Image (cartoon, rainbow, N blue to C red; front, top):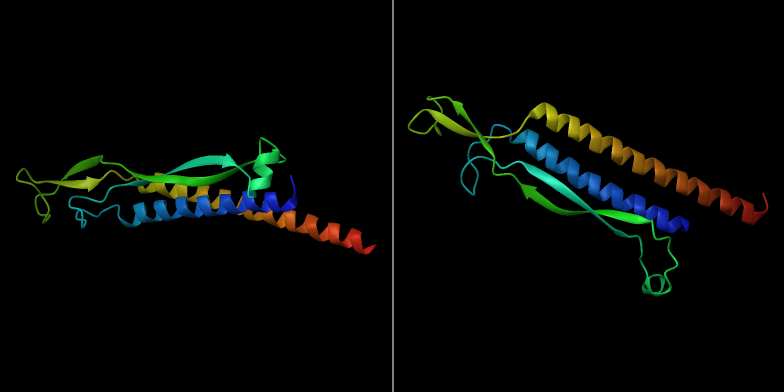
Length: 146
């Protein structure tokens, strides 16, 4: 695997973790949202990841030059949960006849922990990219005879 493939793999990780971070941020921001444009409470988002072989050029695919285990990651879809919790609050404008309000099923502590995990994964991919860049620079230095 060459250095550019390593950068492509890390870049795919950055993009996937950014998408995950956005979903968790949205969940936290809307933890108390009882009305949406679609109607009803906000629906919690969860990002689903998928992988595929890290190939960029058609010739690589034909010749099978890339290591079979090298995989890029991508966000395959963002799913929305339909689960809601009912909170008794008869004074709330969205309360039903029994006084219950449909609220998003979001635990802000869990969302914060997931957001921190996504941040750490993002930082790990940045570190991998920096190491790859340092390797490339060392290779250039060797080529110059220093």
